[in-house]
Image (tube, rainbow, N blue to C red):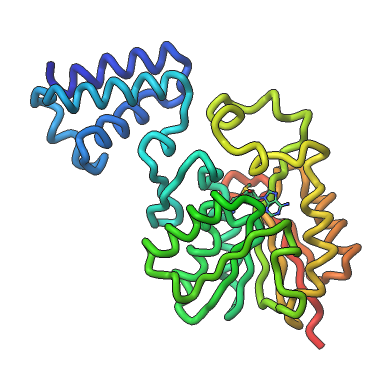
Length: 280
Ligand SMILES: C[S@@+](CC[C@H](N)C(=O)[O-])C[C@H]1O[C@@H](n2cnc3c(N)ncnc32)[C@H](O)[C@@H]1O
């Protein structure tokens, strides 16, 4: 059977399993099985698939049909133009998080802190884009930090990226101050969990998704502690769920931050809250 025939069969199987973008995923998995970039796949489609490739492809398609995320099957995910290593220990970097990157890159910063760094995608992107900056990434999860460290090494950023384990501010030295503090904390409320896709609910770390409460627990801790760790004039920027703008802006105000803004993503949904510590 040719690659095109295998692809057609996989597409039918994935569509039947309810995979949302079955055609795109089938192509990505076939490219992965062939060790090709998806852009080069078309050239290989008329040829018969070598048996070992066909076997690899069928195994990947079966796992995708069971709703494992593509990034877990390929071990990779593109974020802000760079390739990140991804495992089931970290949140799969999301395109909407690029809104936080865009907002952060409008500021000047030499010292950046990323709380709940996961794969490291936010911290490492900011360091890659600002070649003079240094940063600290923290997480409660040791396995997640191992993934972030691996990504730092792959991107040549190890000399400028440090990592520390602990719950939110506990992982940060008491005297440390930053020009920019960013976070994409777990913000899904417990009662929203049943509405999540199986790829998310069954395959991503629960601690990366939810606080098992109202979705705002992390923002309360982050906002309250930020003034102690921001340099004068420094900014706190967090990703939010689309309906959390007012609540999180209120927490920033209660913590004494100024210039508070709720910023939209490309679809016009509230996605980032930013605030600043008054310059002295
Ligand atoms: C939504 S994920 C974001 C991961 C990554 N920054 C990204 O944007 O893809 C939230 C991260 O916060 C971490 N986390 C959860 N609870 C935490 C806590 N109490 N202290 C520090 N990190 C925590 C999770 O392990 C997870 O890596």
